Image (cartoon, rainbow, N blue to C red; front, top):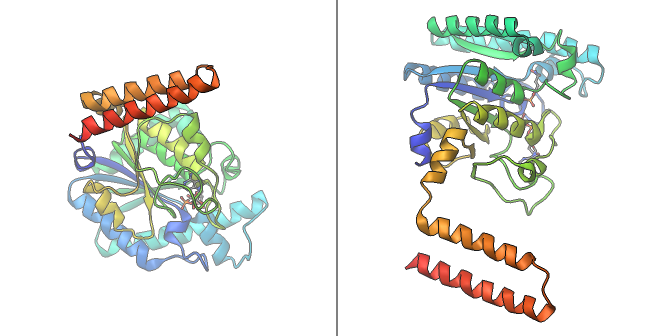
Length: 325
Ligand SMILES: Nc1ncnc2c1ncn2[C@@H]1O[C@H](COP(=O)(O)OP(=O)(O)O)[C@@H](O)[C@H]1O
Ligand SMILES: N[C@@H](CCC(=O)OP(=O)(O)O)C(=O)O
């Protein structure tokens, strides 16, 4: 099973854009050009018969700019005010762009309760179902002006996590997180030049979680840590998830076409299928590597250890040669 098979047949897609994707780094102003392209991509997906939900950040950042604040709002009240001003501006622009193509859109502002409270969750699901039926594209954000807890960005409140909960709420089969970076690395590449890119993740474990650090930009909030949290939620409910760079917004089309772009987190179903599809040679190689690792960990006398390592190297070489033949 390859990426194309996994991604091209997706039906219900949640796409999250971070503040850094829809604004200019230098000024924090809205990148209208990119937003327009984004809206066209969304409408095109709809035209192909897909159902799309947008989770759009930007309220706080845009509000901060509209209000002319030089620095990130520090107090709770300042964040609330920025979000209230910015959300209106953001929706006004989305509305205008969608309207150019006669595509209806809707604002859905969620709070923690929309997910944690059973009744609120049912109401939210009902609203999304009806919007889908009416072929409207919902644009979701947190209700930052009143959700003070969420604005702390400590527990529930970041849009990566929110997007995953939305995917869960509507039973989406794909979650795309457009970020300011092309995907997950073994460490934050902005701080560690030796960090290596990870194309596919099938298991999210403690080691992987440790690789994912916080945000390092002026406008970003969650960093990679919240994206891993989102991946756990999304893949757990059977949705695949892709993190990709929003610099080139057309990347969304490439992801949908199954091109090897960004980091793909496999849903639990695809994880199982991949395991079953592992070739006997690869399975043998894995078993052998595991055995060697175990052997090397055994306390041996120094000379024995050296001998064991040499033998292990030879054995590995032989398996690799056999594989190549
Ligand atoms: N292991 C990692 N791999 C990639 N990026 C990482 C990693 N750890 C931390 N980061 C940081 O996460 C940032 C992306 O998250 P964030 O700043 O919240 O932006 P956005 O909201 O646009 O996704 C990257 O720019 C990078 O500095
Ligand atoms: N709800 C907030 C965004 C929170 C958030 O996660 O932001 P980001 O890291 O830019 O996706 C807002 O609209 O400003």
